[in-house]
Length: 521
Ligand code: KIV
Ligand code: ZN
Image 1 (cartoon, rainbow, N blue to C red):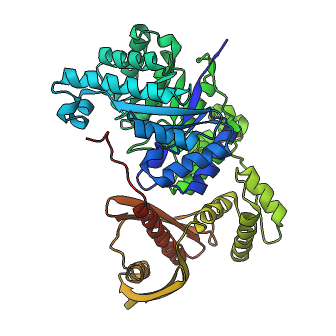
Image 2 (cartoon, rainbow, N blue to C red):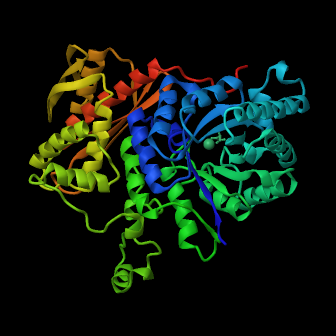
Image 3 (cartoon, rainbow, N blue to C red):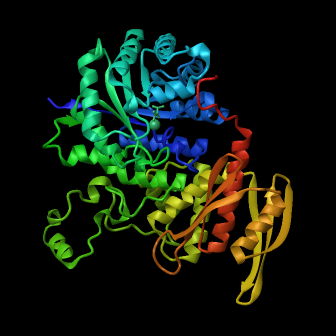
């Protein structure tokens, strides 16, 4: 009998920690619904104590999906209680508590003498904190996961002691994070095997792997963990996450599926939903999937050389081990146009994984008609970006009313913007180094901001002259970095919208309370 691998999706928690990838609550709910259709077993929805918005997201996701929802907590009572408060209305939920266990984490994050003077004393304190946090979580739910942060760099015998304490206190899942993406696949696998051998009562808990991609090994390490007995893997769609990201869900799944002859394990993932899920996450986060990304990249099924094309025409298996259809990426794109009705649009959006409300559909339909006036054929990717726009529209404080630019060879570029801010309309003009810069400076003046632009990218959503341009701007304001996305057939308009969206986002973040990164010192 093949054994089941539990898929713990952390796109909405660790994935959202990708620099600039912040999602609003509505986008998170929409992604969570798609993750449920994909068939993940657990959705980690956020870190409730970290901000009111995170708390609300965890609460609303739990209310919207028939999947076990987990919330993250440091190994301290207020964090654990916050997860419980966010999830208490749900029938089945998981509290996921963690604490750093490597020497460097212990020495640096728990410097104060109250944690102990020597490393040995501090290590004992960590064991006690882990045990207490799990026992406290256990008073709220049976489903408690414990993570030994930076387990990849933790001395294995000590790690075994920590995990044993967590299991004694009631942890039902023990997670081994390679937090810094430091380990090699064989080494990580050996660590899992050693823990299976040495941790007392390990059979009472599921062993989980949580791998980061700093050396490009997150998926390989996760597979090595499975090979050595892990029965849960933590991963994200498109591999998004802190720094170089987390293990990519679609890559792990397809490795297990395509090589079913090698792996005697299964998951409950419906692989035909992989492509839609990938594209939805990309559209909402503004993190573009690299063309050569395994499984879901645009080039994953393109064949450039004549020899390959000839082979694929004769039999696609000559050069393809996955068909696009298998992951839900059709070769022929369905096109909508001016004469497509609201029902046709609703059906296509549904096929792409979106479930807009009646009001949203009404609004999107109007935008769809405007777009169909400008470009004859509306493709799936056009619809995805329309949905992305719609989700943001409802959260925005600053809205573009109009803009005007004047620019050209040997002429000074000037931009004028008119922005709605609640009841007020703010108008400003500025000159700049080209029309985009002029508009951005006019916006800065109108909103009196001191943000700096970290990156500005333009891409065409689909092919052709009439294609929509998508602009992604990353803006830094103080410590926070926010991403804005704007789409239009006019790239200047897309630029202005993207910049405004990023400023709306920084505005929201400034209203949130940020967590301290470590247990209070
Ligand atoms: O990478 C990590 O260690 C984590 C833990 C909080 C599980 O994300
Ligand atoms: Zn992580």
